[in-house]
Image (cartoon, rainbow, N blue to C red; front, side):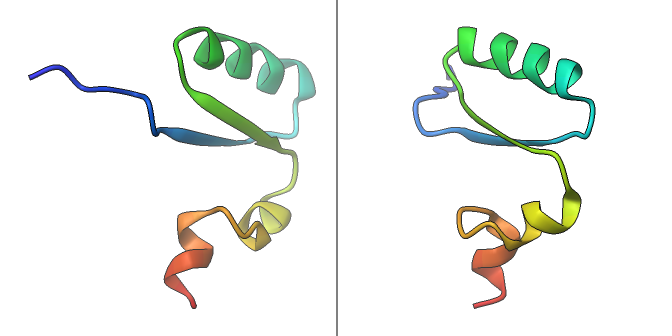
Length: 56
């Protein structure tokens, strides 16, 4: 069975902007939806993260 990445969303938490952009570009070129957050605390507060959904 082949996995589909149609609904995958990736959140990259990385303070190195160059590394985050490179990783985002690679993942997007492979069909994934990608967001970048440079601060861990801000990433946890994002309404679109699983961690935040579980705490509701």
